[in-house]
Image (tube, rainbow, N blue to C red; front, side, top):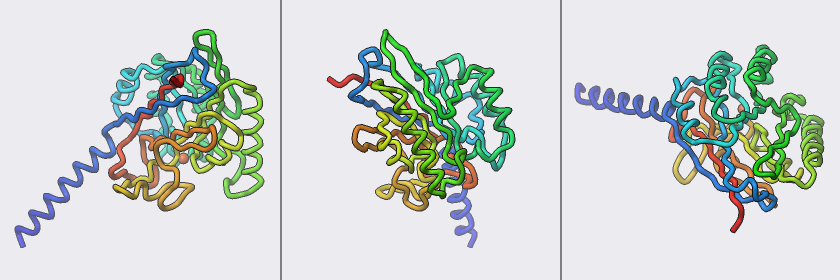
Length: 278
Ligand SMILES: [Fe+2]
């Protein structure tokens, strides 16, 4: 009996240490994409993506990793705050620390839609120089060339994502914003990967998305187990997806929300290098 208790205690201790590591150590995923419309001046342009922080505090480690990656821009794809244990200060402090690294572009997630503090948070990060893209696009210049960067609010800002009329309004906004970019390469920041068909139909070249948390638990040969908006065994949970000319990068994100831990699914920073085709 004593031996059994000892073995069980040791197993619980080892699993607890693993769980702590799995939820607090950072991993970097590198992608290289070559959209046909990429202008020469953007060859080698580096984008670092931060997603679904859910006001988790990495106590400076996340900031240092981002600094080392030396990005040209930083994109934040929503849910930087968690609506169930809201601590906007953690997220504002994080932004304050990384704002000198590179220009920051931010879009909302579904959690920002739910919190009363969002307008105040938005005002604070705007003051820190963050480009808050709420259904708008901006021009980015490099070496005499230009691309467009578009950001849409999470679909819940249009109304319930389950209602057809809101989906139609969201889709029309995507079309409108892509038409505005003209012939220029257009990158979209949009929180939810499950709306990939709409991004591809609108004709975006490259999309950065998050929300799925990698499926929270990842199993070998199976992938992600459960994601918000997609349910069990989500189709879009991490990595890259392609449809027509549109490529989407899905970050597993960094924090947790209602489901309090990740398994085989460490917090992830996504790095994307734009490279001219040979
Ligand atoms: Fe989300």
